Length: 157
Image (cartoon, rainbow, N blue to C red; front, side, top):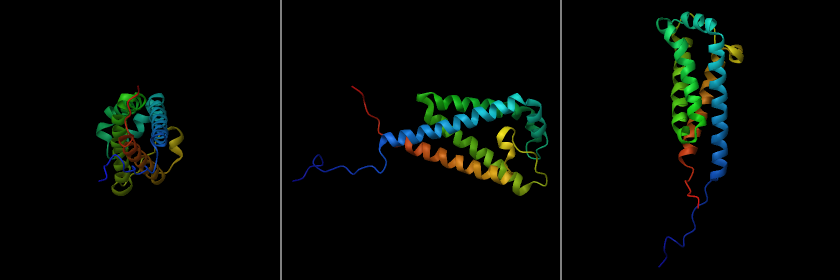
């Protein structure tokens, strides 16, 4: 009679250490993105407010969003650097990137007017490039969440 204790366990395709390294890279990319974009928006507040006020979709909310978006990006960035809140930060990053991507999709497909893009380095991207950039970051968040959930928790003695 064979017991389950004698059966060899299947090897994971990716070891936990590699999973953690990949999660860390994704976290670093998101933290850099969110802190950079938040800082750009806050440092060039007048330009950010003007760009948001010209958006056909969010015009009525631009006075709130001009503060809410960068503050949200900073909060999510902080969630990502605190070990106990990393998973929540990844979920929040995913949700925010999905919202941004839906906004860009809406501008590209349903708006007669396409306003200026983001500030900083990202302003050199077209809206189509920005859409692809966001989709890539959505994939990063999904992969990060999946890997984070599948890293075995070990107790240290």
